[in-house]
Image (cartoon, rainbow, N blue to C red):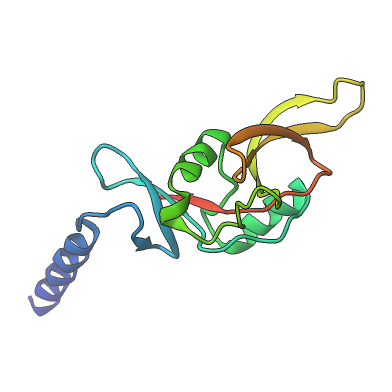
Length: 147
C-alpha cells in the first residue's frame, strides 16, 4: 500500500510540474521557448547559443550532438524564431555590416547550372529575408526542439 501512495504522489507531482503555464522567453528543457501552440502546452524551444558559421552538413551534425530531439529548424520555424529574436537573445549582432545568416533544414532546389549541389533556405537575421545557400556556404546554427 505504501508503494502505491508513493507512486501516486510522484505521479501528481510530475503532472503538476508539466501542467504549469509556459511563456515565450521561459527557459525550458535546455533552451528558450520561442513558440507556443494554442493550448500553451506544446511548442518550440531554441538553443541558448549560436555556433560559428559552418557548412550545412556540419550544421546538421552539430544539432544531433546536442542530444535527442535537437535539430535544424525548418524555414517556417526559422521565421518564427526571427520574430522572437529579441526575447530569445544571443544572436549575432544585427549591425548591417555583419551578415547574420542561419541555416534551416528546408531544401529548396538543386543547382540550376547542372551540378549536384543542393540549396537550403537560410534566414539573414541582419536583414529579415530568406535566402537560398548551397550546402558548401557557411551560416550559423541555432538548434531547435519541439516539446
